[in-house]
View (spheres, rainbow, N blue to C red):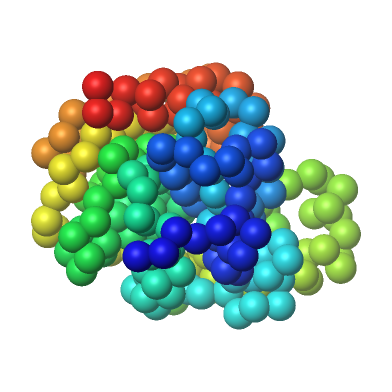
Amino acid sequence: MHSASPQKAPSWVRPIPGRTTPGGLRLFCFPYAGAGTSVFREWGVGLPEEVEAFAVQLPGRDDRIFDRPIANLDELLDMLVPALLPYLDRPFAFFGHSMGAIVSWELARRLQQEKGLEPVRVVVSGCRALPYHESRTLDELDLSDEELVNELRRLNGTPEELLQNPDFVTFILPTFRADLSLFASYVYRPGELLNCPVSAFGGDADPRVSVEHLKGWVELTTGPAEVEIFPGGHLFLNGERENVLRSVARALRTVGH
């Protein structure tokens, strides 16, 4: 298997500034619904020097805004596996927040089943353990544009002045609608467990994800699992970035120790 060069990164995989020097471990970060790789732009400075970090850019956002967003997880995994495979010739780890946690976990399961590859650690953030996920049908997801904007407002991750801008709203809503469809319609399929260590992060004021929901991740791996709570709501990783990165760095340093 050939090692991928960051300069020739395919459209799915983007180097995180500050951590592009090839190291002993590759970290792949998966964003939450409606977000792109820009969420992780400032992460490089907080990660260990031995980590080479990448953000996964899903279609329909940032510089892939004109690519069709994908509302079906299996279809997304079918594309992600070959996109990431050239990068998996070294030990690798996953970080995913909310929708990104589901995508990264199911990608890890798919890689284990189909390729015999497994992360050395998975960090799931702001996401219920998969058996606790509340699935909703597509009919229940038939949200109006106004309802989608209110959902973005509740997440508190988009500046209000942008939400008041009709051009921006028209631009972003198709992607956010597709992401919500993927997230909400997800149904956990019991199967093979992961074997790697797992870290589960949550916000103490997240109305959707409780400590009990996070503890459920312990049941989904044969490896050790830990739960860590940070101040903040659902998007605590933005306000608590420094502390979150400190915990991610610690988790990555303990791999194999």
